Length: 319
Image (cartoon, rainbow, N blue to C red; front, side, top):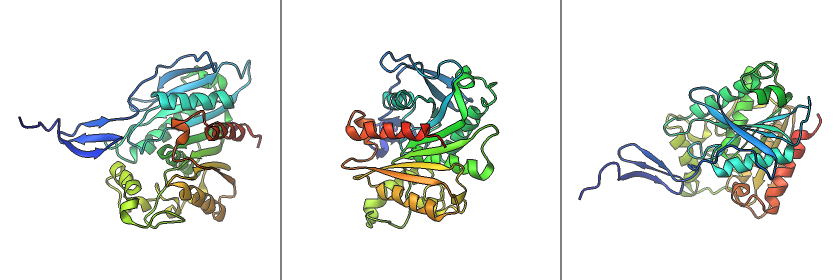
């Protein structure tokens, strides 16, 4: 019996996704859904909100902190997954953001942007910017969500993310610097966990062989088929962005992992910032012996615990 187009694989990106000849996409990770809840162990409460017909989010607040009129730092979190997989609602990211909220005593908006390839770049960036503006609409206490009106301190707003989500956090912060943050918002800093940056020319200890660089380059082209510059596009390679020094925050925290193929890009990002006209402060923290986004697969290991504690210190530092 002949195989139908619905059963024939056209492109196999296992273990992440498969594209079939009839055009439908099967995502292999991040498809589970954990309902929002009040977590009895951490005291963190979560709920889902609709930002627009295309964008939604999961909100988190710590019930044990911020009593009375005390307001808390606001973190917008952008999940990773190569712009193609994962959501804020799967167990991996629900638990990751919940842990940050519990440790840091912050309010968090975990953004559900639309995924490539159905929604190619720049759609994930535009959706994330829309989420930032939606959050900012609460700065006067009159926005559509009462949690943000009552609990979020818009003088202390942070963007954070891992891998592709860290790339998004950087690009939203850059857009905030170029076109200015929405009124009433002070974008204090960004947290980039194992950021997905790349470039045509190898740096540091990156492999020089094309076949060894194909994965990082291929994911980008898959997510952004209209790209003219490949991984030297300014969205992917900050060194190619003429506006790089206009990053719209004063503090940056970058996490890298010793065994991560993207490690050198995180260090290079710091070097670029320090050489630019930006004028803020940037710190890189390297986890020895671990690989890309290890904190998601092994959240209780020493390096993962240290990572979360460092984020808590960063967002609560008085500046």
